Image (cartoon, rainbow over all chains, first blue to last red; front, side, top):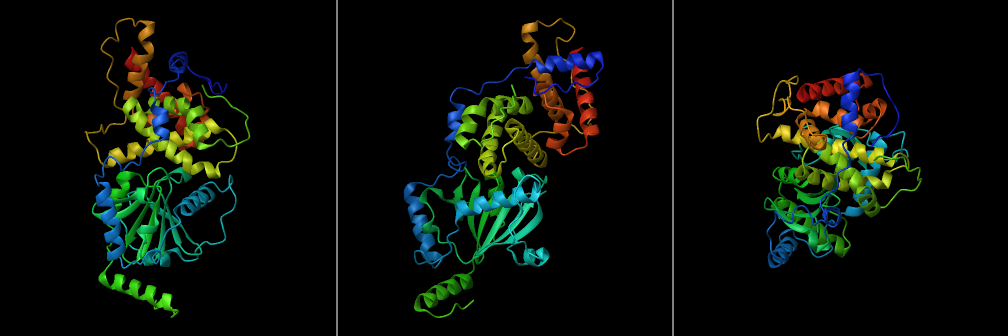
Length: 239
Length: 170
């Protein structure tokens, strides 16, 4: 069980306690646990009781209520955003172990944060960095300054086209439509007129955040629908 | 249990779970103190490993896993403190209750379970460094890095943790 031979001078009793503790052997997980952990279902699965029919109806209602012709809204590239999160978090918190940050750091984070929909994140999470990608803005939060604990919130203007995201991730959280990949801790939500993708929060944490999500207004929906129509007809975007 | 592999390649997530699952589970169990919490913790660790592998630079892989496991455990503790389900002790110097049979010579066969019970009763700020040092065998320097605290703090917490265990055992 000894990892290295870094012995330190200790009193006899202390060495005795240390020796007893070092005798605690490895612990086997319950049979089948690791296989189950590797293939575990989304954390929300047991807490969300929507049937397949309800999910389908929900997705359909979403497509209509959000003014979305199929493919007309924002479809967050969730895998890319998860990679972006990992890259930025690792680069920011472990600058000596990873490649330099991409050249996209925002020069005025205060201005950016004021523009973002206000979400109630878990207490302790503090904004650390802000980045602008080609089609998103990323706010990086952390409580412990560890890359593994970081949370990213990606903002993309427009209404989420939930119909274009994999169906198995569609669900309602606290009556708010969402798309969830629990394995990668990714959640996609609509907050006012922005698509919000959260990376790094647990199921319980997301449920709390969802309660603070501003709902899209009728004006937002109308504006998005108008933009969609005009862009299809070749007119400039109204925004 | 923890051995430097010297392997320069980054394993896949599946390989991590299969090859290092027992290592992660052992640390999770020693930190959490029971199988139920250990299983929840391992789930969280595997998610973080999956996210973090993309940026992992080959090195001390089990050290990296230990750091993730420890951070995940401390996050859970912080969350529980924010939403306590039972009253938490306020006095950081409280003495662990002595074992019921402390005055009876223990059967050597029972010692690990008994020790584990006492370890689980140890306050988190002492339990974590003691587990990392004495159970997992990491150096003071490594523990200071994992916990992001000065090495003097690590030494004193380990010393006090051991002292509390000693009191509980005698």
